[in-house]
Image (tube, rainbow, N blue to C red; front, side, top):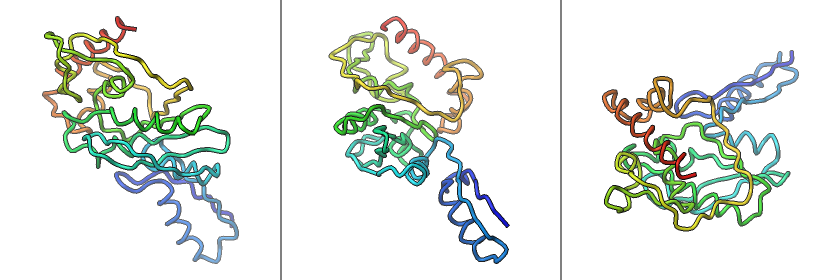
Length: 230
């Protein structure tokens, strides 16, 4: 009998590859299995790069950066045979790295991207599944050179605390990587509105129901500022 093992992950903590490996160990104890194919299905969240490495013979590397709470960490990423690099954003912006969603920032993704650039990848693929930060990418854009200020012209704090106070966007010196940045996400959601990111995923990230309408309005204002700036 030929058996195909193609699981997705078991939420919240067991990735597809780990599930597939466990199933394979059990099935191989059965004499009825003549051939076992293991093809775990990645969902674009934590653990995706482990599947990619096995499937494409990529090489895992590590870079120093900062997590969503501002703590120094080492993060994994993958260099693929075709010259592409892959980053799993949840490694530094996932649930275990976000003790307080109001203060959590995407800033640390910037130094990680720039460190990957030392290897001259032809493109950088970033998986966004399981990211628990809800700052609209403000921290990452700050690292790339945008400055977010309040009505008095002072820098706003990082995270959602800054999103509620940002009044204007200025620029210091943009240093965006000169290679394509390809974002992979489990599903396409609008930024704002009842079907948008805040109302759909906000509670999962630790926001209270009463906060969702207010934060959605702040996100609308933030999106308008970005549109006017660019």
